[in-house]
Image (cartoon, rainbow, N blue to C red; front, side, top):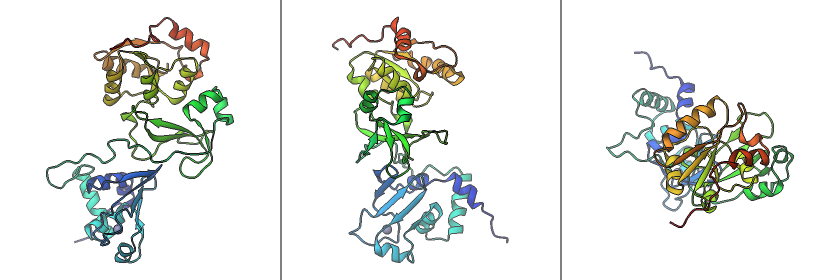
Amino acid sequence: MPAEWVDFKSVKAKVSMETVLSHYDVRLRRVGVDQFRGKCPLPTHSSARSNDSFSVSFTRNAWSCQSASCIAARSGRVGGNVFDFVAEMERCSIREAALRLDRSLIENLLPVATSGDKQPEPYTSENRPLSFTLRNIDHRHSYVISRGLSVQTARYFGVGYYDGNGFLRGRVVIPIHNEHGELVAYSGRTIDETEPKYRLPAGFRKSHVLFNLHRAIQSRVYTLILVEGFFDTFKIHQAGHRNVAALMGSKLSDRQAELIGTHFDQVTLMLDADEAGKAATVAAETALSSVVGVQIVELASGTQPDQLASEDINQLLGGLDHDVPTPDR
Ligand SMILES: [Zn+2]
């Protein structure tokens, strides 16, 4: 019988470390922008003392275990990729690991766990607070200024050019918090036309948060101005409105709708006036109108809030009931 054929490259493209870890119900905690750490799940791991030796990078799709006995049991290999991980877990060859992953994909067994009837939550279902903050961020960088932000605004949001190490190096970083005000991620925007325009840590769920929501809640205004992007938020804030939050895209998720309904009575939609933004406005209005009152700001075709001067923003928002402080409730 001829050996079963397996396309390593295509399997590798479809299966991430995140999927595989979720499959084996391995839970790690975030220790860096793109670093997760925890107890080593491999059968080669025998040391009871090193219980925090396993680490993973999702952007590189790579893992390693630093325990000396675990490395020795793996013939000196410190870590590897998705196939190496599955091979170690299943105690099979790399080829067999790739075959098993391929079969699991065909049978739709991935990314859902197959063991027993319990279906574990993907372990990154919640954006966990970061245990660090980036330092030496330049709020006066020319890119920040070129987007129309004052140094005061940049400082307020913690936005600026980052020259340190890691996947955000050489980008303008934007701290993202959850609704409680805990820092959960940094996004990094290129300062030129390099793709991707924005970088976010692997495993980060942007559909679970609204950018700047914690400050909008603190503004004690009962209407939320909802925009698409980070820079829309900065410009609306700079025009004097603290009750603004961003979708970080154009699609409103169920979780985001729920967050809005929990904290606000009304929403003013101010999405981009392009095709995607117009469609998103209709979808958001439909999704939100059963939860809160919805008002829509219509921008001139082809424009978006981050391109507008404060006077234009205030004129557009001026006729609307958007800045009234929340009555005591
Ligand atoms: Zn180990």
